[in-house]
View 1: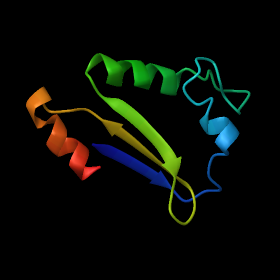
View 2 (view 1 turned 135 degrees about the horizontal axis):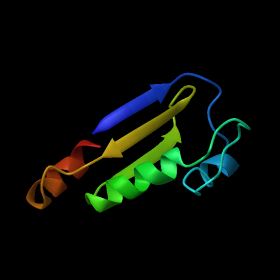
View 3 (view 1 turned 45 degrees about the horizontal axis):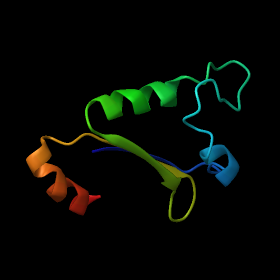
View 4 (view 1 turned 120 degrees about the vertical axis):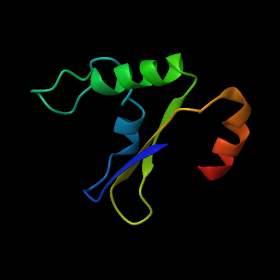
Length: 79
């Protein structure tokens, strides 16, 4: 599990719903393909990405890749 956390203003629910749409970005100088590509990579390895509000402020992004299919239940218990 790779977890990235920031303490900025966070991501609105509307934008969170669109984060993985290819080409979506709130910034003019960005392509908007990074998170959709990351999700495809995670899925190809039977993993996933979770984006959620941080408890106090900001956003938490978790990139999860199982070590193997037998270890998957244990991995889910840790997240």
